[in-house]
Length: 197
Image 1: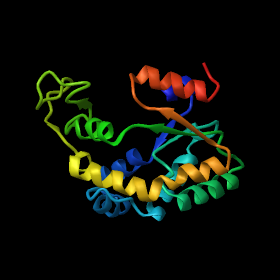
Image 2 (image 1 turned 90 degrees about the horizontal axis):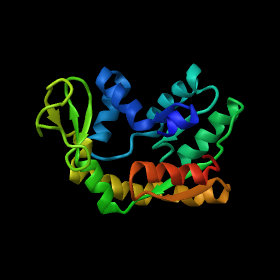
Image 3 (image 1 turned 120 degrees about the vertical axis):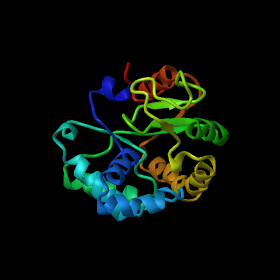
Image 4 (image 1 turned 90 degrees about the vertical axis):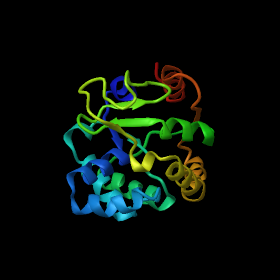
């Protein structure tokens, strides 16, 4: 929704990593070992993908980083990467959601093996729990969406990612938004925080 409203591409580190895994690239195979355990993928792998994506033509006039950076060292490297490109961050938005809601949202996702369509067993259920509405392909739960893996990811977030809030607060870039409600409600809060309508 923000991508359309801001006319800027969403650059999601998770999407970039999963694409590398699907492609079977060397980077993807290395990343998969960490992702399957709910651990952070090492910085050099993620930063390489992000740097390549920032150099894409569609990102030249702006972009939305999603799920990146995840650590203070990544944030510092990102700042250097952006300085080298003559740009900076306008704002960092933290969408705050209670852990149990995060677990429900992520562990309920199902993906079509055939066409990649996404469903959610509670919020956007397929007509048949095992089949895609679009192509009748088999639906599955990604390993990194399993409840135990999500809980491990939340532990990593608490220790490695939460310090980013202090980092970006010190830089005067952090805005916090409540992440409970409909997607439209959350989008409105983010746009209000950014001073956009």
